Image (cartoon, rainbow, N blue to C red; front, side, top):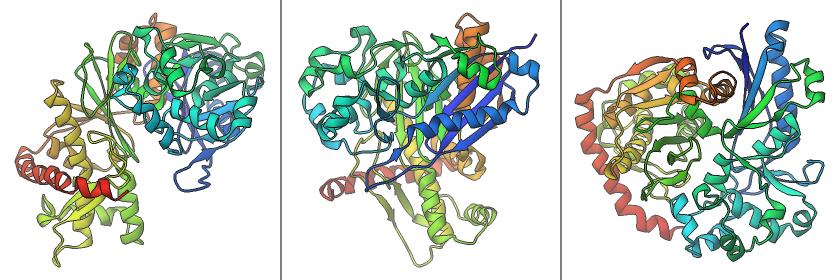
Length: 498
């Protein structure tokens, strides 16, 4: 009798639920959107209850499409979520305030103070905490919302909240804890002296202390949830992780010397290394955050598809997507001397600065709006090439990119990225790598005794192979050098202009 697996991807804009078989074929998938509030610039908040309502609505839509037999044979589930999306809760797990979304940067001052300690634990996260992460945000709540902090039972992440709703167990993932909470498994977990130095001496009281590895048993679904959806009461929930990192399972990049690129509003570049090594301009190395005994490395571009959205909304209003692409295809490699920098919201890696700015350089009266559009496509490609160059310069080989996300549907852009980097790009059949990754982890626990690679090999299927045009690559090498020098020459000015 066939077995089925539930994957849940709680993203920025909504919750997506999918039901997959043991071959990675989805028999149903649905998404329910939820709103984000932006109370002041730099802040972003959500209602945590919307996540739970969205999960249930999406699951109900899925179950309405499958048979009773399939419903009863959903044996395990797994959740991934944004991070760090943080919410204080009481003992009944009811939110005490709006959740602070991952992109919220209100905790800049707290992050700066944390980083000024130069504590050895910071070497496990690229030498610096980001304001987006859990620890700076918890510290911000303690210092700025004292009443909420004092009344809170725990301050938890989106993943913790949803897992608790599903099975009534409060457990955090080693993925979130390692990448966003300054938790280092090989050093005994949380570093007490670090927490005391930054003012979180009560961390054991306010934070979740149970930390499980990805794929670990969290608990059975609650009897109430099983009855509400007529599910098998023995269905289990296994531990998931950060949405981008769980997509590694859905891309089948869970072994060293593979790099997955999540291509959407922002780009995330993810890979695993066998040995611990200090890398510059890279987030990590993260100790066992995805696969036990392997070190997670992460690069990222904060502005990618969002830059194209900005340009299209302001300069291509009324034009069809096909028209925009056709015009951009007619522009030659290098945009007739026009070069752009893609740092519209700062730079994540390799420069790690929020003060970097977007730039157009080399504008002439002969340039058209199509030139400006293609220059942005090339700029994001140069940003990816710069991240790959940084990996390779420090001894990490990159042979092929495995991509997922909405950008993979833009074949012109994908070809430009392949040409600029000189690397082949593989796009898998299932583009929703986060949901599939959760399905892979759930299946590994149920069918393969926790062997993630065996499950991924069965469930992840390549679809498109994009090869670089090496003639174009040679042209792009010279333009890439100009891209690097352009930032180098403007960096000091950008840092002065806060």
